[in-house]
Length: 312
Image 1 (cartoon, rainbow, N blue to C red):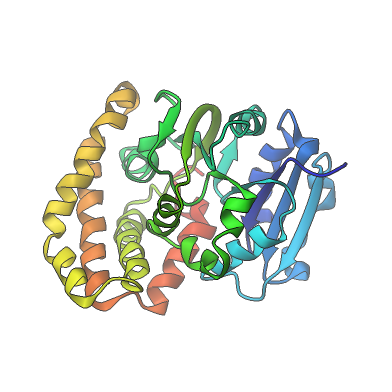
Image 2 (cartoon, rainbow, N blue to C red; image 1 turned 45 degrees about the horizontal axis):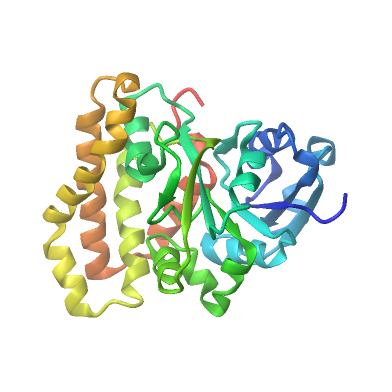
């Protein structure tokens, strides 16, 4: 292979954790043009199955000591990647065969970030749909293509130079919340939504872990913002959390309209409960921040999400 066209960055503890993700990458119509960058604490512990990566353009293993919390590990993967486009993947997001080719085609435009068309990988329950809609509903694959004002931090494809332009702020930008969007808006960078690049995302669907993850998601957003927000602003947002919940719910109307026929009974109730839990976690996070234990739990949900998926 010559120079890769797309680098996919994955943070994992063991190859078995990302085997299904790698299988999906091998199934790409242009798999030989994809470089897979695997960031792990130990190459020996990773136990890479070379045969399971056959057909990919290149596989690069980056040892990073501690992969949790994940933003520094993701940043290490970005810096190790060699393709002009970098997709920040997850252990529980699965690309359809035309995904990579559609991402490359979209990036021929002037966009700095291309957001794929996301869908629910485990659409068998209200909790899964509520979590998916809250996190990725604004970029559901049934919505029309076009320029958008922002995208998620991961499960998107960036121009490599755009990420590297963040310099020493890259680790912080790749944390939960809106850090990378904020930095890119300031720099005048642009996002494009491409639903013809389908990506399925698995979501927590077991009740107790689902409630805990929703709560921690809000807490992680607050913890990220705490590094740059004043105490008075954090207190104001904590007090305004009921209004924030209403704003978040109002943003769900458009994505819910597009998929309402597919939604199981109880999805709206679960969505409301999830938003309340998330804003409660955000309020607590603004007041006291997030502990190491909170971060460890969230990292486990991110790395091993399939443990918390019913019928995984």
